[in-house]
Image (cartoon, rainbow over all chains, first blue to last red):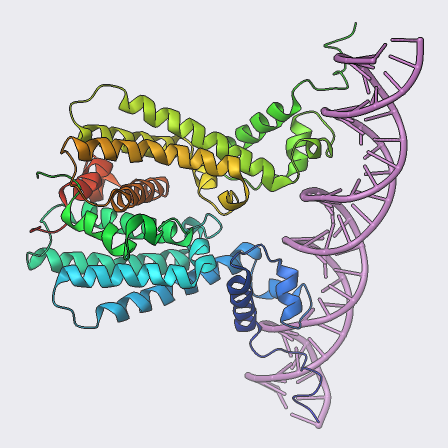
Length: 202
Length: 202
DNA sequence: CCTCCATGTTTACAGGAGAAACTTATCAGG
DNA sequence: CCTGATAAGTTTCTCCTGTAAACATGGAGG
């Protein structure tokens, strides 16, 4: 009679448990207004225990955001790996994957880009974000080399692409990309505007 | 001896004062972690007084956001009114104005697009946001009519334009549009990508 | 002049963040 | 096998917040 009864004093992997609980709550309410104490309670642990693993509430939030970036990166990479005919198709696939991810996890996605997940004070979070951004960057580089994308400053193109995808994701989350207004495939239509250009002449 | 001494019991326009104080604090720290009590304190009023004007803390935040949208709209309209040669130039001017606004008021701008300024539960805020968005919409409509912009579904083009501008504003705020990476005029360069298109052939 | 109502104030309370001090389990070395 | 040291929990405490309720005040209209 030693282990499973009455919860052992030491949790085993409380850090992981806290993260998972918080992710669950985030997914359930689509917001991160939950309190640290509530997370502790649901993890069956005293309200001060989390402080052994996270300096403060925001540090937990940043860890959630980091997880989000990792998952988003996986999703995008996976979507791109479905060998597609052109760089353009790959870009669209990655963008769609990102926006789908946002729609499936609106709370998490918002957190990832909110000021509560401050990348300037958390190298790990920063790296995770950069790494995901890097997927897009490499895609553009390859596309420029094989002549699919216009040969302009890579950073400008990346900024435009990233801004577009993220902006569309936010619009999508907020339900501002409605079929009746933008047609059957609003995301596709909007991406085409970027890909083809907005102006009539170059 | 009746007025200026010892503050009169009734403030005169506490609602306005609370908003202004909160805007000041937002501008000072570039975040909205301030407490309602602190706002009351700085307005020289008891900590419960604000509840006579705002149901709760979030209602004040939404009012700040609403003010932000109004101001942003004014700024963009002003920028566009500098009679410019083309619809394209007007679009660039409006976009630049939006991004400049974001850079000058990063905290306010973030609040405007954060989930703490929930447009789905505040018609006034929603209207203000729609109204500002409308500026872009009308610009695009005019541009399509005079043949400056490609004749695609107006909503798709608006979504793309809005997403681009907002996305760039966020990148700019976060210091992710650095000169050494994107050249001397990063915003201009990124906007050109949208205007000219990313792909080589149509 | 008196009374009403919007706008303030005081008081009260249920929580939360986080610090400090205390408790347990585990593990490494003698 | 005992013995600390240490990591990971727990209890307790303080300060602060949001918000509700009851009360005060003063200006405007009858």
